[in-house]
Each structure stands twice: as structure tokens, then as C-alpha cells.
Amino acid sequence: MANLITLSRLLLLLALVLLLHSPPTWWQLFNLPLLILIFVSDGLDGYVARKKNQSTLFGALFDIAADRIVENVLWVVLAVLGYAPVWVPILFIVRGAIVDAIRSHDASEGIAPFAGTRSLMMQTLVSGRSMRIGYAVLKATTFGYLVLFMPLQWLNFPGWTTHGPLIHTLANWLIGSTVALNLVRGLPVVVDFLLRGRNGAAPGATNP
Image (cartoon, rainbow, N blue to C red; front, side, top):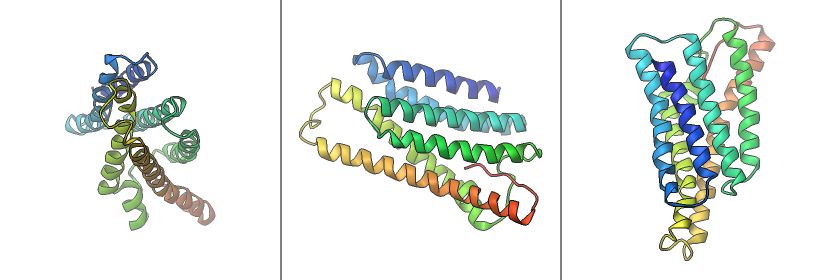
């Protein structure tokens, strides 16, 4: 059941991408509701897995892969539409590839994400509940703000022209904050992996 919810998240993503690339009409008003469903399903699949005692290594990795797909695809689409700088999706893809390679190494040892408890800093920055929730909220807010650009422009939303600089400044601030927090959560994973390799320590797992 949980894996089906994860799969549905990818189908909702496909619908959102098609909608974002369609001509500006009133259909664009569904951009935000679709995005909300995508992020709600992100939390729902994990809840269902725990509630029904269906948590598996495959399910955890599938959920992480879906998260990565949603994040990277949305950044690429927003960059193509001109709502985000092109360096943003490049950075997310590179960062994700490095961290996921480390995660794959740990998974080959049978260690699930969130299993590592090597240091307080690692727990707090990478897998801490407050950090994870904070990043999820910031990411959802950023994506939600950006996907509203098209319908607001089409509807000629009052103040869009007069407050244009402020609107784009806020967009840049949200993008920059999301990028910064993403890097902050990924860097400890890379550092820890390198230290483990130097010290010959047993591998662990984290989920930024």
C-alpha cells in the first residue's frame, strides 16, 4: 500500500509537469493543488508503512528515490520555464547523485536510511526530525510560490506589475534558502563517508 502511494506521487508529478508546460489557461489554477497532493503523499506513504508495519529497505529506498525525482524534475521544469536559475537544478542533481551513491553503498551492506547515529551533528543536520520537517516546509513553500507564477500572470493578478521586483526578490530568497539548507544537510553525509573510509569504520546510513 505504501509503495502504491509513492508511485502515485510520481504520477501526480507527471500531471503537474504536463500542466506547467500547457498554454496558460484557467487549468493552471490546479498547479498548486497538485503540488500539495504530491507533498502530502510524501508524508502519507511513510505513515502508512509504519502504521501497517510494512516498512522495508526497498520501500525506504523507493520513497527516497521518488523524493529525489520530484525535487530534481520540478527544479528542471522551473528552470526551463525561466522561474529558477539553471544552476539550481544542476546543483541539486550533482548533490543528489553524490549522496545517493553513498546511500547505495550503505544499502549494499543492508543498512537502511536513518540507521546511522554516528554523531549528534549528523543526527541533527541530516536526520533530525525538526530539520527534516523544516526543509520539507521550506521546499514546499518555494515550489508552491514558483508554480503560482504562471496562473497569477495569466489572471493579471493585481499588484503583479507594480510589485514585480518584490515578488521576484522573495522568489530568489526562497530559492537561495532552499539551496543552502539542501547543501547543509548533504555536506555532513559526504564528510562522514570520507572519514569512515579513512578510518576503516563500519558504514552507516543517513537520509538527507
